[in-house]
Image 1 (cartoon, rainbow, N blue to C red):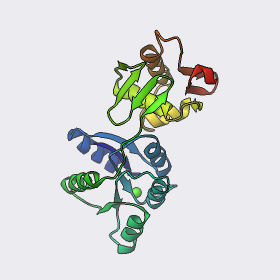
Image 2 (image 1 turned 180 degrees about the horizontal axis):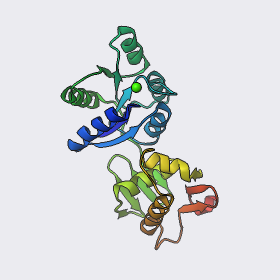
Image 3 (image 1 turned 45 degrees about the vertical axis):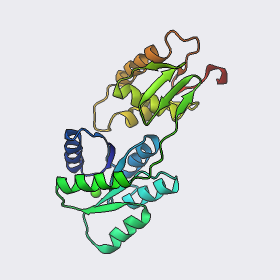
Image 4 (image 1 turned 120 degrees about the vertical axis):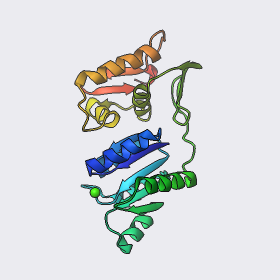
Length: 226
Ligand code: CA
């Protein structure tokens, strides 16, 4: 499963991430509601683990905005309080199930499996820019019908750019979305990945899709539309 954890308690988030990765799941972490919302809107997940009490945008609001935007990814909410009104409010906002802290990892895993099975997330549609096609569900990328093999980070980077095709995305936005805030990402790490992507996608092609916008960031688009 691809799981997004939105939890401001870093120890708790790291513990859940580690446990899920040991079960071979792929995990992204956000430590505040706004970042969680951005990542949830930009990538496809099989389940979202959402803490209710978060700085800035709280869990209720994250769930509400996702559902309002027709994002149907199953949500397991975490609450430190077992007060019935909080739980009702969370379920009302669009959560599918809840767990009251503290909980065992086994129970967490069981609940997560159960909501993701019920999940009504529609199969994501293909992303295309000119003859470049990315399938978020199968992770297959092709250019002019030739399959391109990407590393997980290259794939995430390409998916992020393609979801914003035609728009300029700042370097900072990309770094925050692809690497976690708390990771130490060198400025030139992004440049290195962009140049890897270019070598796989644009080299040997007449039309270059990945473009540098000087002083601003990067964009992916058809050259004819610049
Ligand atoms: Ca919290």
